[in-house]
Image (cartoon, rainbow, N blue to C red; front, side, top):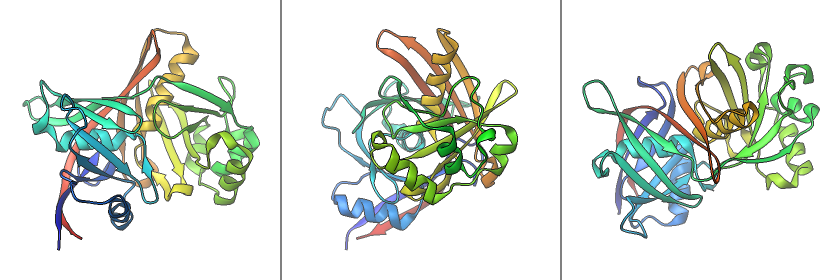
Length: 294
């Protein structure tokens, strides 16, 4: 029997049982692709990461990310949490992860006492803005009335920066509280929008003082609701910068409140010669240690 240690951390929080849960296998050598997928399904968290030696020794590791049903090219909280777990491998506070979407740089964050408290990651690709979705269809997916979507600044719009495309919807406070994913509507939306490639994640947001509140639904991939979604927060930050016309910006996003897992995602975005680039960071807290037997 083969044994593979793993740890779990809560990401984008400063306390246990907040934020988004993540399992990390720090040494996944010897685990097959099928076993990685089976372990991610067995653990039943939004994502699980498997750490392998890098193809380029100049980088820290090759990191593979799986959710319950498939492998992901990039994701936010798995990179933040994996960086926290692998902090002892950092060089000058920086780790470099090889992933399907490209190279992901992870910068460790430290608290007042100097201990590692979390990490900040840069999205591996510049912002890409896709098609708009009809308001009625987007509202049906979110289980809200069309009037609950705010269109003064933009229609429901698909955006990505290395991860799965996210449908960004600005909504009213009342619709944010009432929203719940409608699975048949999600299926209709995917069938009507070939550009989605069979995948659809809704990222609802609203203005909340100087910051933002958000919720994320991705039921077709097994995540009914996500407590913190870094790979949706970065395209949102980039998209808001795109709309503003500014050179740079920063937004704090609260997510997971309705789930009882409050999360804080700190985002930035800036214009570069290759397009708008975004970052997201937050705190991490270790929770469990275990061993998988295969």
